[in-house]
Length: 416
Length: 161
Image 1 (cartoon, rainbow over the protein chains, first blue to last red):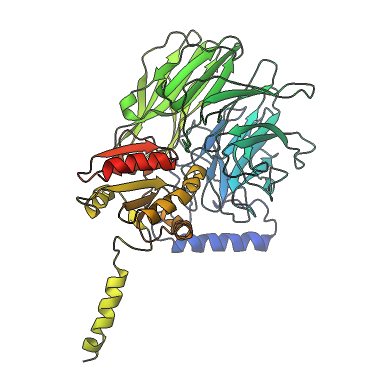
Image 2 (cartoon, chains in turn cyan, yellow):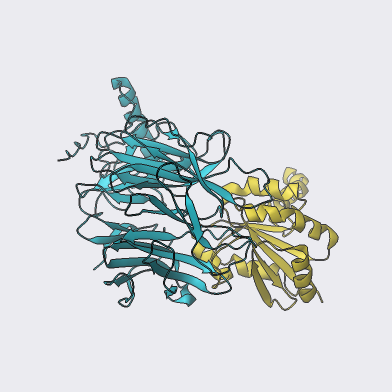
């Protein structure tokens, strides 16, 4: 049974490492004076509103590229990046209100996030919370890692994840927990780049265990990847990570491939799975998604290849060796984008966004037979300004779309 | 009167403060700026290069763009950085390094990049670099990705005839 931490009686942002009374007092005085000076703040300084989904209780108004994950007790945890600080908060009412944010990095950093280069959060069965995010260090971009072992009351001092963080850029990190709760982080790493005229990046990864949390050993997983697209990750029945990513194949073709680690120190396997023939030297900024359930692989991706253009879905019943004919998703005239897929047995859910020049619509589509037959897609939300990508989450009872937007705030939308 | 004496000086300062097409600082590109960009180049063929300081493929193309600019001084080039205002300095540095700082250049200045992208081209997904070739009547062709010298020559031949 997880204990909920007590809300602090003075509702300010918790600075995890400030232990002294004078330190805390000074911190609170500074915080109050910051609020007093902030021009457009409509926050009452005495009672910092803890808990709207509209970020009015955040020091700098929150951020767009937010990642969320359910914990074992049904709490929804979020990592929220602002310009110089990253926070974690949680909701006990399915995203309607959120707790007072807890600060991850007490030292200000130049946080660097985007749709493809996102912060990550994962909560294991014991309630341990892992987070990753990118910020500038001695290198332009570095993946940082932090963990909370006290149910989110405090977080460890963030540390660079890559063992070569000070020598080469690390970015586009992907945090994932395997079925036993073992944490993996995969990321794009530039340590092997020698000839910068040759496109193609490497993926490195590390596992994190209880004892050696802070000594990360990085292993190379693959290279010749398109460095502008996020990595998708899932776990196979044998608990091996399976990644889906955009590669650069001979001829400059930016199609997708699967990468799977093997036990017993054997080299990872990798093979190409989409054949859209998108020959281009460009940054698509549009990564794929993968889910694995009941021995089936489900993937969705974006392409502008000569063979097909737009958003597509396919499934495989033989562990990714062969895939079904790509199924187009969405209205091609409305820029369908940034898909996510979730698989629970035979129940498959897809989500993506569409844009008509003014409004963004959030779409979902469901299958009850493992991806062969699909119910008609439906639009379940919309936004009138900037939006983040949609993500499918489940608390093991229901499926939701986690969707952040500038004007409407954060929404956890049930998929019915 | 002292004001009369300083008037030319003030006028100079005022003019210096106004943005002109051949300027050093990138202009702020917002919703509606695409129309402004077109009218800056009325009745002229031109090439619009959309790029980003974070786009490795775009930076690769810079040297070639630089040599095109030098060898074709009659070609109007416009550059638009799909970054944000805070990247203005970085944008300037890259353009100066490639002797491209004397051409009309813009940077996204609104957060809703999706909207600005759509106003430029409702069929464009935002992949970079993106190059548009406009003929005199402003009929345009959009191409995604790094282009070779042969590609540029072929496209420019069409718009500059």
